[in-house]
Length: 238
Image (tube, rainbow, N blue to C red):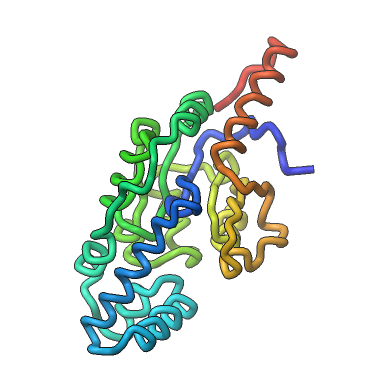
C-alpha cells in the first residue's frame, strides 16, 4: 500500500521540472543536452565524442555537468545556463488536464529544479500552468549545488517555510527523492525510460510511482473528492 494514499496531510506540493512537470516523450531535455555538448565543444575545442564523455563524467560525479565544469574549469554558471537553455520550447503543448488537476489539488505548489528560473518559466508558460505556482527554487537559489546534494533541499525548506512532513515531492530521477524522504517528505517518482534515472527506484525512499504525472494527479484529485463525498465530515487540510 502506498504511504498515505489520500495525501490529505500535504500542504506543499514540490515538483521537479524537466521530464516531470512535462512528459519525457516531448524530449525537450534532449535539446538541452545537445546544447551542453556544443558548449563543451566550443569552450574546450574538442570533438563531439570527447564533449559527450566530458559531459557524462561531470554529470555522474557532480549531479550536473555544470557543477563539474564549475569545480574543474571555473566556468560562469549564468552564461552556461543561458547558453544551454537557448532552445525551441515549441514542442511542449498546452496541458489542460494537468492545469485542471493542479487547480483542484489545493495547497501551495513550488518548482524545484536544477535548471534556471527562466527555463522553468518558459516551460510552465507552454504548459499553461504557471498560475498555480507560488515559487521556483532553481539552481542559482541553491548556490549552484544540484540535487541530490542535501543542501538544496534544506535551503528550499528554509526559504519557503516548508514543513517537510507536510510536503510531497515529485521527481523523475529516483535518487533525487532520497534527500526529500530523509527530511520526512512524501515522495512520488515519475518514471521515464531512462535507465540512469531509474537507479534506486526500488528503494524505500520512494512512496509512490507513476508513469504519467497528469494522470496520477487527476486520479488523486478524484479519489479525494470521492472520499469527501462519502464522508462529508472529512475536511481536507490541503
